[in-house]
Amino acid sequence: MINRRNFVLHLPLLYFLYFLPRVTRGFEIAAVRIWPNEEYTRLAIEHLEEKMKIQYSNEKNPDRIVIKLFNMKITKKNFNKLANTNLENTPIKKISILNSPTNEVKIIFHTNPLTRARISSIPAIAHYRDRLVIDFIPAKKEDELLSFLENYEKEKELNKRAEQQKGIKKPIIIAIDPGHGGEDPGAIGKKGTKEKDVVLKIAKRLKRRIEKNPRFKVFLTRNGDYFISLRSRIKKAKRAGASIFVSIHADAWIRPDARGASVYILSDKGASSEAARWMAKKENLSDLVGGEIMTKNDEIAKTIFNMSTSAQIKNSSILGKKVLEELSTVSHIHKKTVEGAGFAVLKNPDIPSILVETAFISNPQEENRLRNGLHQEKIASALNNGILTFIKNSKLRF
Image (cartoon, rainbow, N blue to C red; front, side):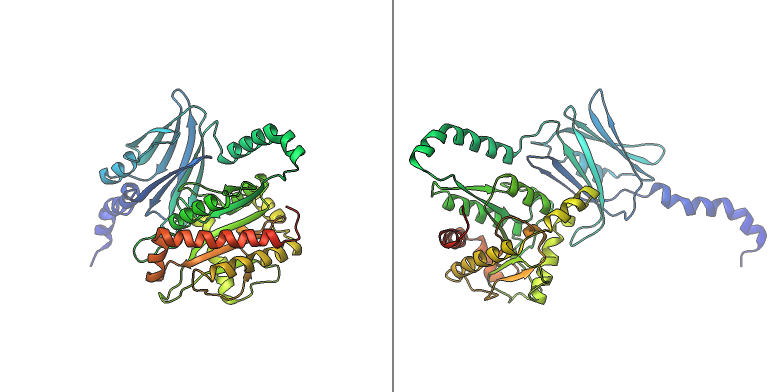
């Protein structure tokens, strides 16, 4: 039993022991991932701390972005994880890490001139732990969409007179959206196949097929392994002047025997089934998994994009039926009819938009088929035929 005198004598030691873990706990890094794209480079630091006090500054001479983590230490193992990150094709030249005597971890990103940072702290979601997400935005960026539009404008200018004389119609632009990407892998099969990789391959195959017809041009919302928010996908399609929007995905379920393709559209009357509601909820989480936090401006944009018309939904349904019919020739069909729910990526007020789940990547047999180039080509062919049939029979003016 501790008497009062002994308790008082031990107070300094108890005080020290109580605060020691708070001051010297290690900043444990679970993983470091970096995703360069045409707009910015996203660095995601997955860590074991639920709450961190962070301070950020942009410094000059030389240009650097400094992040301080308070009441932290960093071990050599975790130091190496961060310091050895591959910085190729990014605006970051070098990463330095300092453990200060005042129990701060200082991470210094040596950057190209005028690079700015956007920092978010993302809570644990899906298979990820808490993350510190930093977007490094270069002063001057080359946007694939901008290049696409510039080339298109040049072609249009060069051929303007010839087109007028011959009566050639302007190209029909189709936006193909490979789902997920970068920090968001989408669903993952038993063999480790990632949805983001498979759907990008199918999208590129579809692009090649569609563009065999000189009347069509395809714009891919992404052409590499990087993340784009759901709202940005819609914005890019609109800016490109797309007449049709097709988002490509691969499904997953807790039971490995679930199989087949499905086609979804936006619904303004609630989900057509509980499965459709669940699917929309899962796909709409993509932004958070990918490391996006919605801002006030994003909320305003979201309201505008929510104003999808009944005509758009009707035309999306017709497009979906044509694509579903073609998919039935190359694959088992999971849902025999086009399903509807509140898919954020389909909230496009102007153009027919569909989301295609090509197969269940969680089914081992279908995962194998999705990995196979010949089967990817069959899916691309079916999507191509469905889109062309819709355009041919549509009353819309393209």
